[in-house]
Length: 218
Image (cartoon, rainbow, N blue to C red; front, side, top):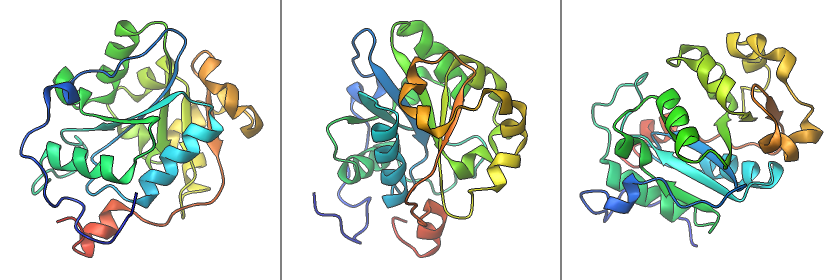
């Protein structure tokens, strides 16, 4: 798919489809990564995290969960959910990546509620929570963050300027004894939580905040 600098939100429908609000289909034993965010706008940094997780964690699917709104961020001026879903799909066109708005369907923006509901609905699926390293630095501010880490293995993907700082963050220190060697990342989905891995590699300096500052996708 051609990726250009055009507005990622152009020509988008006004409301999400009903299927976007449902958890995507799975089969028993499937390895599924959960990668959430506002995606305002989606960019190559997000794609890098998604592709890294798919490859290094040996995932069958990666669910890109477009949230109705981040409780820790200002939501004024946030593009509609449908526009952000469609923009994410245009960027992340790997057939193993499924863009979903299941959190809106669940009726809660809080990740711990999403995790607990999904693990009840799909008890035979091997879920892994995926995030960029910049989010690990603030993970301790998420509501009931310890419940997330106790429920699912975590995969942290390196981001520029975030390689060392997140590893001294409260969440990283709290779960330091449960960190796996990077060489074992491919088995993370099979590990019982708490377990986490920090994935290094080529990094993208792009961020949604910087793109909004430049006026892209606004």
